[in-house]
Image (cartoon, rainbow, N blue to C red; front, side, top):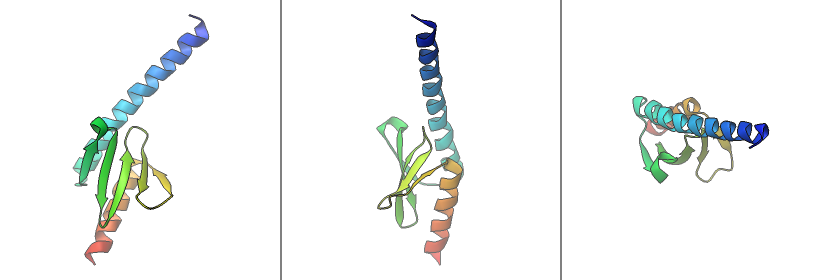
Length: 92
């Protein structure tokens, strides 16, 4: 193979490993924060309960979308903040 192909293959492998690490880390962060979630597709997709709302979260990329909303957001820490805010708003 050419050097360029080897570089792309190495990059692909590194990205796959990074997403795998993200999946493990994100699930641990949600669990520590007391966030309830349901695992789908072997952990590639998590369904998170945020008060009265349901959030679809893809921990490999950090993408999360509140169902019914077109807005795409990123980051497990921001997701935890959002869930905490929604819980507080619902308990009032």
